[in-house]
Length: 448
Image 1 (cartoon, rainbow, N blue to C red):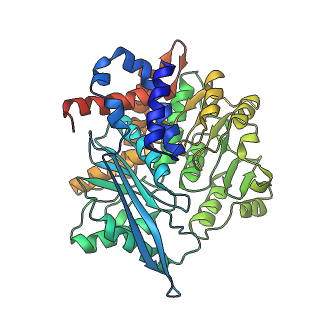
Image 2: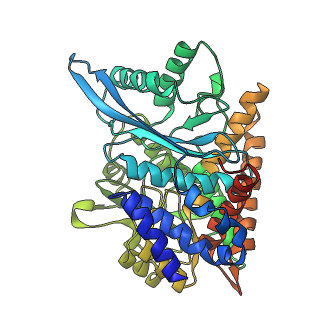
Image 3: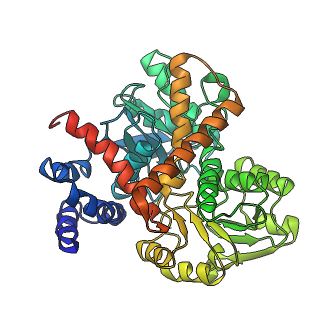
């Protein structure tokens, strides 16, 4: 079996040179589902695996824009339309200097399985640009978004490809992108999700990824007769996902104690409460400041990233990596386990390195991979699409209830395909469950 995986990965690396994150994501899925494929040769005969790793379409384009001083800049834009077997392409747009083709292919590939797990009819895609919105004026961000959408609008639509936000793309950016699409196409449709509540957005959408991650973690705890009450939780990041992860943890009686950004992390031993979280939201969403200002405001410890310090050295019961990919290394994983951590739920996409995942699995702790644990965001995006199609707006309680139900069903699927004796391998369960639905649709639709 390992030889088959090795041979397959050689082909992937040869065809996609230098795209290390994509290689990593494919390897994780292939390793999980290869035993399943051995028992189901119909997928092998149809070369489903070879087809599912190849994007249906890759769009790459230049994005010229002018700053407030009149200087011209040129960035690169992308849209990876990975798989549409079960619905329109669905996945976020990321604006960040680190964006490149390999990272977006990894994210699009993950999105296929994540969207499949939600039970909603959505295919997988991802896009973005190496543009950095930090330090830019609202006018500069608007000019960039309008230029970006001028090209992207040719390739998307409510029944074709429905982008959303991601890192660097929040409500402001979605607004500018939507406005330009509407202007170019002369139509008001649900072509983007994460829209403002007054013009087609859904309640709970900003909270969805964080809330959903906590709901999934809660289901994992129930398999061992545990609850959230009193659990000390470490969180990385301080953006949208981290903020609402903390908010839901507080609601359920847990005690979040850390938040971070690229410069370092805070450790509040007394716990982050509602008042402190409100400060973080204003700091990050309005002032666009750094998390170290929290330490000054509430007199708690702050550790600089320059010294190699990250939240995973803090003693905790549960960890929620919610910043970016590959932030938990093997040593971090061993440190978490040594400090008593019993559960890790990924709020970010692939924040745990493969060797660290192995450490968690060998220790038999509860480990929820991103394609399952952080599927709440795209789930509510799917619910936003439904509301747009019906020209309706559901209540906050209704959307939250549907989100909770979806996360519970995702957990059930992971258990179905991942249970090994008393242990549940959530990585295997999520990958296999996500694969089966997409693969069956591909088989039924023929060689396309």
